[in-house]
Amino acid sequence: MKRAFFVTGTDTDIGKTTVAAGLLHAARLRGLSTAAAKPVASGCEPTSAGLRNGDALALQAECQPPLPYELINPFAFAPPIAPHVAAREAGMALDVPQLATAVRRVLARGADLTLVEGAGGWRVPLSDSADLADLAVALRMPIILVVGLRLGCLNHALLTAEAIRADGLRLAGWVANEVDPGMARREENLQELNVRLGAPCLGRVPRLPCAEAARVAPCLDLEALLDDG
Image 1 (tube, helix red, strand yellow):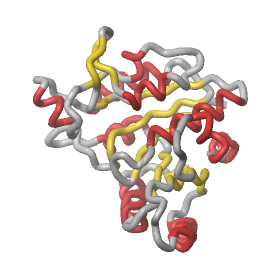
Image 2: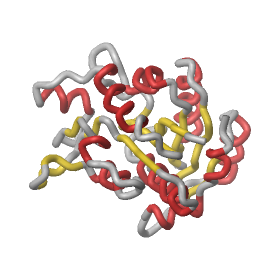
Image 3: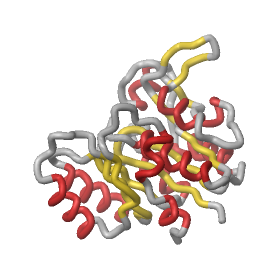
Image 4: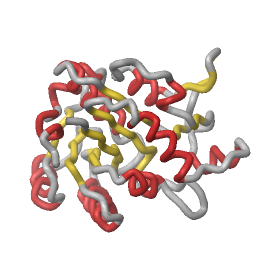
């Protein structure tokens, strides 16, 4: 059965790509086809083939059958700043319909598991009147929330889950990513999240010296995700 999810996080640099690539890798190990999209990305590096984003490249590496980079990341910007500001500086305007059209090209590939990764958190702006949450709403996708375990994660996670549901979308599950190895009362925070988020925990990713997809995949519960819905 085909599954597609939108991956968001409680903040920027919280591990969305780490988790998304891990889930795709776990699916590939099961012999499933995979696809991914990161429709807009800033902080891209110039290459002979054009601007390339490290997160989008990590997702591309886990797509089977392979997908061209431009399909995964159609809107790439060099400055490591908010996407709508980067687009404005590049003389472009981002809007939800154009991003939704780009994502649907990936969904049309019909992979067993397709993940669409946002940028930053749930309310990252796309323009003066729209944000990335509007893209998830337009696509009507269930959400995977990556929670960075650090001081403040309870507030950030609960507010994000509340916003997701207020936008009429379903929180399919969440992943705990240990971004702060020195976090105090980690287990107590995890217990609170399990009780209050109202969605299954899909895994807990420890602090890894090298967060390669192959090392992250065993930390994630792909079965719960594939059984979703």
